[in-house]
Image 1 (cartoon, rainbow over the protein chains, first blue to last red):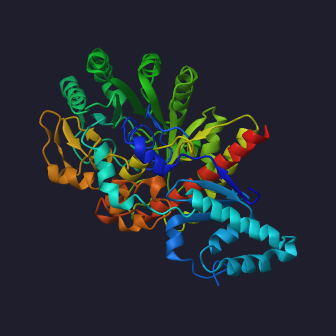
Image 2 (tube, each protein chain N blue to C red):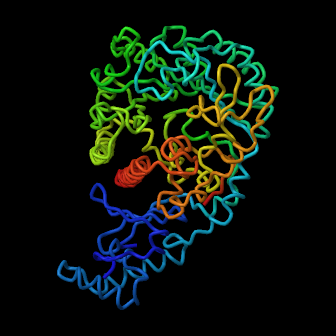
Image 3 (cartoon, chains in turn yellow, orange):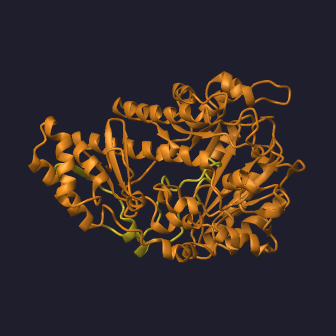
Length: 51
Length: 475
């Protein structure tokens, strides 16, 4: 596309199919300890959907 | 007339977020998670899309840009690109998650997978700003016994269901004041993890005072992460991080931290600082950490009561927001120079980050994650310890206060009115329950200053990630 460059991202709607394994870390626990945000969490799902 | 100074419709506020940062135009499609870097024409047109007919929108944009060398064909082509992305579900994607938020969270609840072990409710530093009130959490000084810690680990294994990765933090106070128990608990966990089909991942959070060669060997062998408390510049660090005689700890701990990190062999660590009203210009503290050779950094706003002298004020907010922008620019600059560093809040994996379950469920406090006091009491997280009303139970009898646990189980991003209409909801997941409680008296409230800081951080993180991708393509 000429005007819009789409960055490759995980499709959240698709992630509903195989997500929810729960193996990822609880959010602030091993780092900041005072503020929650999940965007910087690693996904540890071994059956993660592929594009 | 929108979007050139008028009101943008609520429908589109809920679906997309547009911002300009670092010379870049960014459009986030909230519900699909798609990220778009766009030119000026597309930026304005996405803002106007849906506000009128194709002719109206194209006409308005053409009028604005025709003297800048933009042709009508360009503008029509841009409109087609937007429509194509909309059809593909990566622009103006509807929210299909709200109605099933409770169900999505339930799928990740029902098991415990992480504990914060408060092995020492005492500390060898006397930091006035400590949210744990100098390690005592508003209670008596105490050390956790091995038997209590062992019962906590048994509780974790017994309640972890099919989860393989179990996280355990050694926290306080200062956990190294109970180092012998820490070592024995790790030995115990290593002895049971294989048979239990689990993998323990330990984190040690320390002020550094008691670090010696034995601690370094232990931490680098057994702990998947180490959190080291350093506030940055010597004068900033020593303003609060003093011993009971009032002596600053900077000169004592920095050599120890450097030795630990040098020997860590690339394993994870965070140099974690706190900034307050006295140093909203915290970028200088980040730069001090970098000058000292540390590259894995976290810098957090102080958590305290609103009236405390060191509490961040509304007047500090613009300064702090500017610091986050400058920090993102520094991150990009050093990466280009081959001297990269990590800032905890700017870590973002757009391709493989958290699934929608995680994004809706939030941090897991009170359900997947609990804190354990030296006496074996369970609390929803380390920031609730000392708040008697939030005591969940204990490690011998499990969770007995189901009412409180249910309150946390029902926390999801759509449970907060303010979050339902926020563009950042699937990046922050509703925020910190403890911050919300302390700010509003409810775990389902919001801590509005925290929201402002978070939104700026995520804008910066995404901008830096787009820049990184462009650099990779260029090379």
